[in-house]
Length: 210
Image (tube, rainbow, N blue to C red; front, side, top):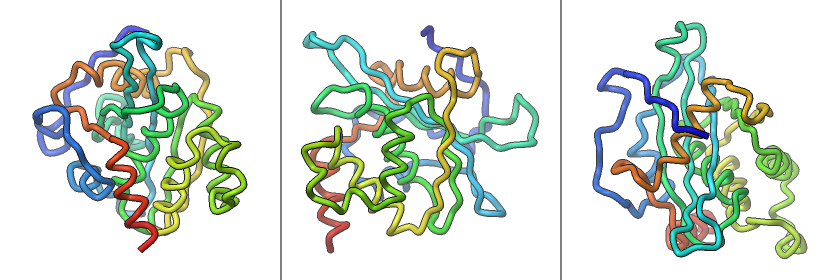
């Protein structure tokens, strides 16, 4: 899908360009993400992931999320956004899960989060989070991206988030979803992309256990 043009937004809601890549933990992602606060603790995000050049030395997984402010008019609806890449084990579902991980890392505690995604695997992954399935070690070898989803589940618990997933039809010319897709597709060439690495996830896993 062609990359969507990034709309003009105010300088206080969009991060300035940073050197790439950054090795950041969930806390660092939250600190570097300019999420626009909500007076009622309700947040709406669109997330997407991208797997490009699979089977080549140039393979990469990109992710992106977009915060939407409802009832603010179409031109002002995008409050802020973030994009990045994740390494190791190239799967499109891993890129999709990374987008959700990055978004949830940015939310304030005790928030109600509406996540819109065109990824059915992400919808199912979040449902397993609600059922606490990732605390069951027997599922380790049966679930794709188990470790990443276990960390997402722990973030939800630790921050006491209420997460409501919504399925969006892919490639339906829906602007906000297409914009998140564009962020994921262009993350590998962007100078403001955040790198989520295996070391990052390991650090978060240790923190969750302590």
